[in-house]
Amino acid sequence: MFKRVIEAIEKYDRIIIHRHSNPDGDAIGSQVGLKNILKENFPEKEIYTVGDPSKRYGFIEDSATDIIPDEYYKGALAFVLDTSAKFLISDERYTLADTVIKMDHHIFTEEFADIEVIDTSFESCCGLIGMFAMQTGLKLNTVAAKALYTGMITDSGRFRYDSTSAQTFKVASFLMEQKFSTNDIYSNLYTDELHSVQLRAKFVLKITKTDAPVSYIYTTLEEAKSYNADVFTISRGMVNTMSDIKGIDIWVNFTETENGVLCEIRSSKFNINPVAVKYGGGGHQKASGATVKDKAEAMAMLEDLIALTK
Image (cartoon, rainbow, N blue to C red; front, side, top):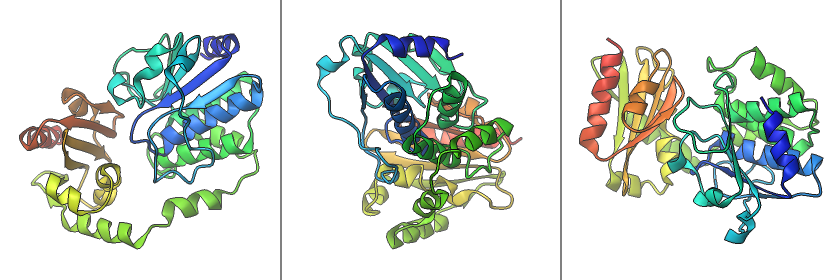
């Protein structure tokens, strides 16, 4: 599966690594992990990472991205990680590279790379990158291992989601052969500012339960602006305030923005991905997202999710 990837890496002297915008722990972890694997094994090559910053996962070592000119893409190899669709990619200059490689674990949406490595059996893109290192015999350093492990635990819900498998723990075991503190990771993930705790409390009070085992939160543009928080925190960061509630099998967090309504959909029981795809989104069977044009379309999505439970 990884032979063509290694051949491409060996061919190019400059490699630029992309991931999706509004990055989560898996996007940052896979980007930092791959960068440091390449630096460790190919020290003569130029390795760069690009993309918008992530405040939430800025604690991951070496996560600051590079500012590079367009001409760096000439004669270069570009990676796009943890991204199934072109519109999600942070920094569209990947199209300027000679060769593009996609490495992803989401359900296939569209083809946009010269080499596509997609495996939905992995709980995270970090797990896929970890397996890439394992199967190709590439050396890890501590920074790479810790970043990849961080992405694995965030995308698997701390190894709770049913995407977690024997393969997950095989890769995690391989990463933990490097000496790093898991306490450092978990303290950063579980420690919150008082403002964040208070914001979560506000969202708990906003939960609306339907007649079906479906709940939702709807945040208007005016409300979102009043929360003194970024869109990522309000949308993806607050969706799981509705998880682990008895009688709720599907939950969705709607957040109005200047460019439409962000829809973060989660489920403990049903495959909600087809609904996300219907509205131009995608993701996983039990964790997907989409952006719709207005509240009316968001409510139509809600009705489709309710119908799914029947």
